[in-house]
Image (cartoon, rainbow, N blue to C red):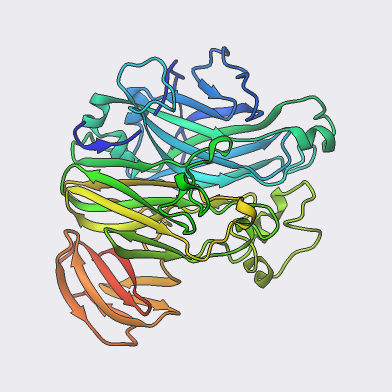
Length: 463
């Protein structure tokens, strides 16, 4: 393996569907209202449908991308998902994955050791009654970095790239509670499309992609992070886990994509307690965050089945912030850790949630992580996904080289770096609210804020 280390799945190629709109947006639809079934049922329904979809389980499907489909991707890419209500009226986890499978295989097992899988986006279904409107819920992710992976010719020479759609659901409650669901085992429909607003990228040999870890599904969560299983933590009694990964080449710009969500719906469970999360790379603290939206009210309209999370009446922001780690009907954030220049070799990333309790030995934190870098140039900004929005409540604004920032945490000092990680200038004093980079040449830079409490927030901007 040359520029990547990762894990994956199968084949029967679904022909691409492309659309050209007046706005010049290009659309690639891979899954169109596909039906998912009871995730615990070992019989795989629709397995012989002949629609180009490999169905590993009722909750995990895969499509092998053609060269034409991979060539579709540009530098600006949105990943849009739509989930339709059938006969599961509870909040469930879904996700879209990239799977790397040794080239030429017509099928694969997601348990094979030479298959490399990475999660591209995670979402939570709302409580939905299929007989009420709206009966579909949308999710959207900015995945501008995906174009570099799809056009990585070294990667394509060694692997087939598959896009997996994973959505676990069970119909048992809806069989009793939802009209028209008696004796049914279909749980959701799923649609996935990618939208690009620019031309396809050129082929490259500069992309470096490393799949570090992929979460385990609900039916086999022995290795998801918690503090009570030896397979789920570095040390029983502590909610922390260290992952080792190897970067095969030096990169001029690198990032880590991290996805976590806290689960455990028992009394006092981790779903209902917001905890501080700490992320360390090679022993250095690089990210702190506390999951949870300001409010879940924007997603109330999709929760058409009565439930104990939303209740009958709107809640104030303070109420939501007192217990909700995530909102049924919302996506889970892709947390982007900007690394700048990063050296080849073996590295570690540790996730620590020291206050997590896991009452009754229940619940877990599914973790997915991948690394990406370029041996030349810089990775895209990932659109609305800020480098630092999860490290603290840090807001940035750039105007003619003047970078303004605001945060509730005191700023101790600031460093300006180039994309290779070299420090170009620094200012060390408390109370800073801006940094003047207007004297620098046009280009891409990193601004590193040192905050009280040992937190470092890094922001990438264009001068």
